[in-house]
Image (cartoon, rainbow, N blue to C red; front, side, top):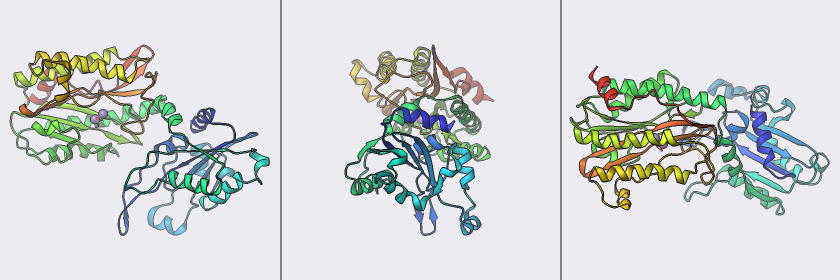
Length: 416
Ligand code: GLY
Ligand code: MN
Ligand code: MN
């Protein structure tokens, strides 16, 4: 599979080019401890290797195309403290790179400098372009490995053309294969179990962090981690889109919005639901909820390949505008921004806000979140209903349809 992905990737780069991807390093947390390692997703997508300090080099030469992996050899001392990590043979097997093309990372710089100098040109011909996973620079954060390497290459070889490869990878990664769809389904299933546990314990007097803990319990049991900071927000807290404090005590009569997901094997779910904490919606809560729900359902019914993200956003927004007028919240269309201030969804995959060509029509095989919401701070109400859908030839399939969202189903569940 990873061989095929590199082949696909290489179709889009210039002949006479190298491409470099870095798996990354876990940032230090304190003296002797690091944050959990999160592999660079573009690197993983092309190699299947989830390990620190590994580099993938793909050469599309004039005469020959080849991929190499550079990594740490097994270190007997590290084996005792942290475990082994992949051997060269294992890395070759997982990635599909020939075992003779897996090399010690200490030799990377000299390998590349030879490649770009004259001595290796017999094998790969002239190399004039280097593609790197170059993201925007983040002020106050250290340069990424790709940025540092771009500077290193230009300092030695000013004639080398440095290009970002993110757009190529974004286009490839937007279309999910069966393995990826299954992985996301698995993450959604774990998320569903976590939500059911959370819902069965939800009641006034409990806490937002207590609900988060119920969810996390199910994740831990399934070797999954939270895909992002779980949002468990009651009352007006739910009008803060990325509310993370989760420190309030749950009060009778409120709604609770949770936005959460399990990440398992690097693929994630991203789900939102909104519930009455005492098990029953008031008439007003229900009226607002039904507007958001109908927007969620109509959009899922309508969504198909070829639609642009802009059309997708506008479709949902129009339904929310209509609904907000009926609810007496607004008179003019543009006033909707007071109650709905995010977009309708995003691609989902190896990243939560996944890469994708957001200016191009939505392709078959994309997985998208559909997450309309209404946030009425003055009424202490925030509602979002978020599903994850797979775009197919003639429409889309709601992968999270088994996570209940109808008023009657929620009230029946909570009554049990
Ligand atoms: N959890 C962030 C989002 O729904 O996009
Ligand atoms: Mn979400
Ligand atoms: Mn989302």
